[in-house]
Image 1 (cartoon, rainbow, N blue to C red):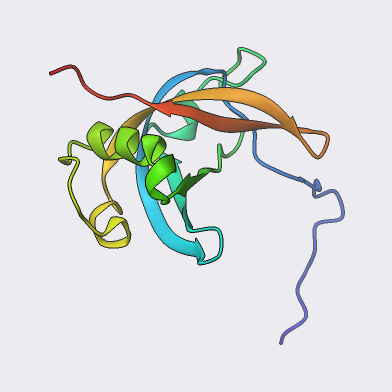
Image 2: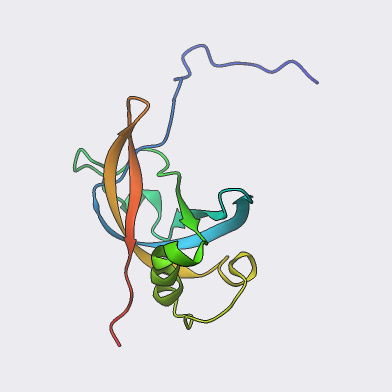
Length: 133
């Protein structure tokens, strides 16, 4: 590999800026079968709005990237409330389907909150907004 020229005043950033709690439109970037023992899937979301239009927790426009949101959804029959909420929020019928195939690329509205994780403020999805029928 070639030697790179470095900027001595470059900042070290540990994470992405969290957005203010609220409801946001997001796009599903990927869905993966995370762990057969846990019987859950990991879903990665990206904000549909450009980062420059999002408001940070300081009530100022975000400076930088909002990053991705992550959620883990249980697939056990007794724990499918969140999967159903996501499925219906995506406009899919609550019936047998393959989330790894059907969900990527779909857009959905989510309610986001702030929580502390490893001494950093992070966004967390609290629920999926199911459109009124």
